[in-house]
Length: 328
Image 1: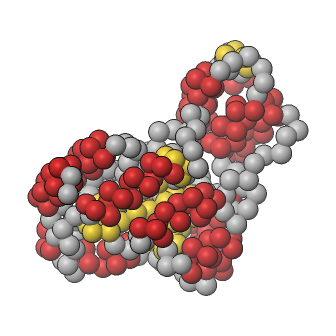
Image 2 (image 1 turned 30 degrees about the vertical axis):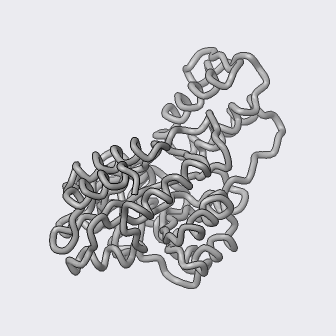
Image 3 (image 1 turned 90 degrees about the vertical axis):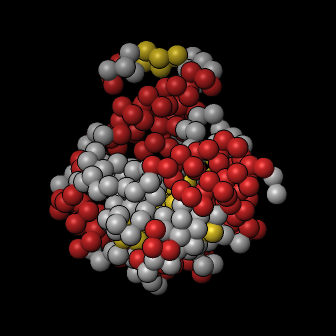
């Protein structure tokens, strides 16, 4: 066994024990791209990187289905180095790229799905990315956004602008965000049809039939703290009912959109998710889950390091954070 694996397993046994002191590491992914794409953020990894991750976690961890892992956590029966794999949003490449790799390694996963985008829908960040990708101009006049004129003559300039625009738009009101995306698309891509990046309902159903766990992620991926409680409740319930119709099984697990406590969701939204009938929910605070962790604020983090050594360091740092405190 390579030195990296031996060193990790020794340190991991101390930082991620089993039994009554059991800790659960929860990985989260979004897209798994067929190949590298400079316009995507670092945590949107490609197939080769994901293959390396899955090979590593299969060797280093005891990878469990998420529902089983949560049951074992509460029964003080988690094995050492317990880990589970999750995806957010419902991208088509989860089915076409990630699923074959998961099957190859015999690994289970949970997919938190936004039902409002299934089929031909496109999330706002993808509209921004694909719009900037398609512009043929050397610069863009974004004074209507208060951003002046920005150079987009090469991929590095486009990359920087994509990241800036996503942060600029993310916390806008939903109607304003949609209006901004529509105007940006028209400015950059004209009458070009937007690409289809999300799964079809039938693909979600196939994942469920294949043994993957399907969880809720709201219907339209709102930042819950930026809408009314009634709107949040309706979006959460619509999503849960839609997933029940697609899979024939009512989802029991939920992930908050964006997921930062006190920024993207508040205590009231944690309570809404519980009232909706879910048994557990996940945020994006880093750390590992223990028996003392709030079941409706379970931590996760997104790995992106490609090399086994760097990935092992990243995983150990996350485990070292230890018990996640309730913050919302």
